[in-house]
Amino acid sequence: MDNLTIAIILIVAGLLLLLAEVVVPSGGILFVLAALALLGGVGLMFLYDPTLGITVLAVLVLAIPFVATFLLDFLMDLWSRSWLGRRFVQSGPKDDATVANMPVNLELEQLRGRIGRAVSALRPAGVAEFDGKRIDVITQGVMLPPGTWVRCIDVKAGKVIVRATERPTLNDLENLDLS
Image (tube, rainbow, N blue to C red; front, side, top):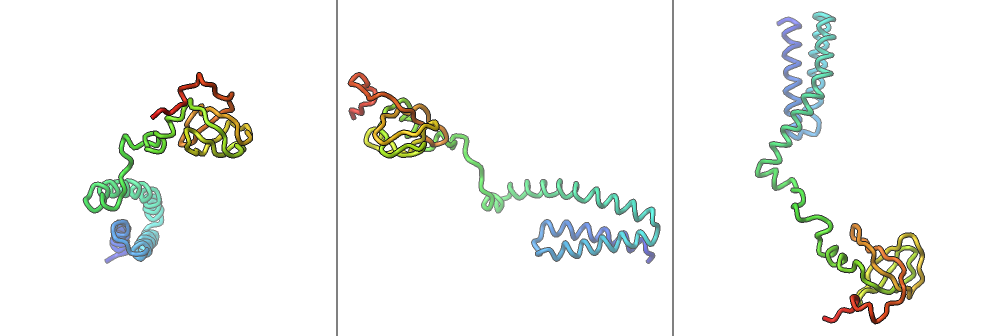
């Protein structure tokens, strides 16, 4: 066998070992063997013909990352569709499982527009009491002393945003929980 035949065999073996490294977890042993085979094959190409060696080296350097990217994408797609892959890969959230639809956030959404009282100093975060329940709240950057009447103006990402308000009167029956 001449150098050209051995070089082609080494390059093909190196590419096959790279493919095997993606599929078989070997701790990098197959990668090292693949790199040695590819380097040996390219080296023998340079001995046979330097122009051919440069061409093969350029093709390998440019082609391997692109082929590896598409191959890994293809293999991951196959893996995620297999019965074993579905057991290992966690599926994404369901359509109705958004942060706003979580039970805690739905409960907090009911506070919108309600009046409560600051239990602790709000600097700007603290605790306020709404309908006998203590809720972690945050102001819009204003510090408020304990005992200040506050109104829930918004609920964003599980955070209750409050603003200071006047003391409620008997006309504010919307805050009364008569249940």
